[in-house]
Length: 340
Image 1 (cartoon, helix red, strand yellow):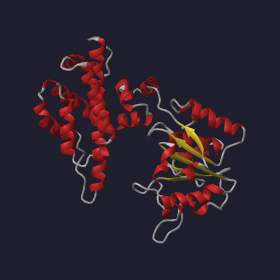
Image 2: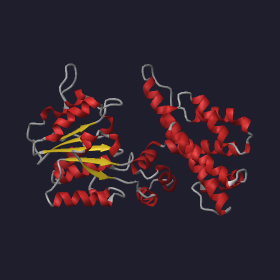
Image 3: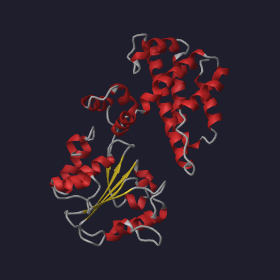
Image 4: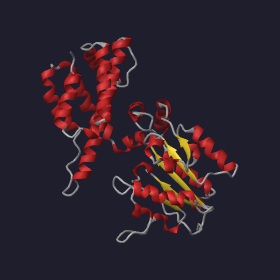
């Protein structure tokens, strides 16, 4: 993907283009910003420009087959030292060819897709390469924030900050590709174009949304004691497909992801209810097809209660990974969401 197709990161693109035009590209960049806003996509566009934007280079980059571009993703939850340097019993480390000049391109590029996953050992081993890299080497590290990488690594990188993309920009891009429900997908993306396109491709949001909104409507019409039954329904709706034997960790991660999407839907619903409560029955809504239900539900709450419901959902979303007991956590959540 060329720079021109990257959504909503104009200051970033201007910075990178200026460095290229001046032939003053620092040897180590740290791209920081929220997940799925375009850090890796921009890194690959930058590599294309660095390599001259020729059809042959671009094709190899797109296919992840370029000999002078090495992409390093975590092994599970961590980026480990054996991924960088040779260790017995493991594949060749990515940095073992550091001292070799590039084969086809002007630079040899190492792209670390999740630099926040370095442990202390692997980060310190990368530090040695960052301190005095060969002149033809280019490092690009991607991370959610500057605080998520070790200060010693941070100090050797030029930071480039990515920001959330406006909803309208994402919606326009989705519409241009004839993707249905562009407004809804853009809203649920929370400023991350990658998330919007992923939701559109997988159909995850569309499959869950209707049932979750029905559940949310029932919450408003039910007494607090019904929270136990509603919490069970929520867990069922957010449950991933059963993992195969030996894939328990994957099942747990998928479960958290599905519950996260469910919480996003609920938060958007309560946002609509708050709009109706504050601005009246004709307030603009995300779920325009649910206006009648939303009006009925909003009438059961005071505005301050709806604001508290949103705060509760956001807090639950942030701490989702810490909630070891899903049953107790969801029951407490639904109790707090019930009208009082």
